[in-house]
Amino acid sequence: MSDASQRARQERALSSLYGLAEDIYTQLDKGRIPQMAIPLRTKSNISFDEKKGVWKYGKGRGQRSAKKLRGAKMLLRTLHVLGFIKGMIDGDRSSTLRELYYISEGWDIAKFSTQDESNLLAEDLEILTGSLREDFRLRPEEDGARVLGDLTLEEVTRRGDPKRFNCKDDVGDSGYGIPFNVEEEKLRLLDCDADFVLAVETGGMFDRLVENRFDEDARAILVHVKGQPARATRRFLKRLSENMGLDCVTFCDGDPWSFRIYASIAYGAIKTAHISEYLATPTASFLGITASDILNYRLPSDDLSPQDVKALQDIRSDPRFNDPFWKDEVTLMLDIGKKAEQQALAKYGLDFVTETYLPEKLAALGVLG
Image 1: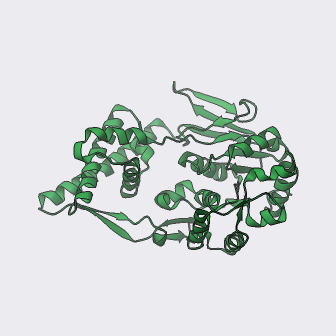
Image 2: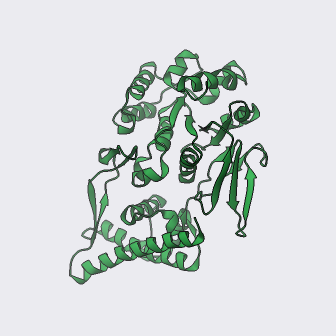
Image 3: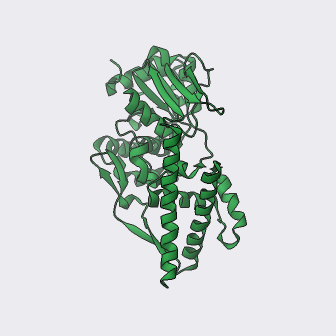
């Protein structure tokens, strides 16, 4: 994708934002109390898109109305944000979401009370315009994934020059850190000599697999997703799956919060269901740690906290987990009252995870022969 294509995306986003502003002013000119309709971002308002294989928002809508002070402030903030975005696009600048929050300090009564408010507004604008916040020149705070394996990339440098490198031979033990923009105009995927990608939750386990050279022995691309994965990480995994034809396998801790990491990779997060088909990898599979693993491998474990129990009960009503595998595993975890970390596998030594656990689990998934 060329710079011209990127600029065209930004111009389309800007045009859509103008449309939102014009709609608000039109309502005011007609003597109406302005309002905007926003899809409800709740579990009850997501449905499975059979064609795309992802979860997306349904038809439920909520109203942002100036009839009440809170709604009036949100509409005023929206207009301030539209002006801020226009200035960035015109000036070829960008802002972090955190900077957007602090920029609002100069907006008098329209300033944001918390960063959650500014983040939600950025997501609302995505939903209303059909564009991405990256097209608004807004970027996240969190780092993207670390990648290690036989994958050759070409990234455009700060000087605008393409630089080619291999994520096994041309990087250190920490791997390659992906940028927040992983689209074709910034990052080209050139070649890959691997059979699958393993998305790893924790840094400790990623480093263990790197030291044990699991990427070489299993012909894998290792991706440290750093807990709940950033958008760039989820998009990168999707590109590896679609563009390079790699199976995507997630390897996480055994607790409800880690189960949600898998769900966000495979089906999309509830709060970003409007762009699930852009971020989600529906063919991704979950390897572990499962409740069954805790029993079968006799892993060291901790008692579930009340928060863990509630999260597991919530998962039972989450449509992304509505299949026999997840129903059985969630029920079993609640029955035994235990959770376990990936690194609990070290009970059997530093090599057990790469010599026994992963080969057995990957074979069961049909990823390794």
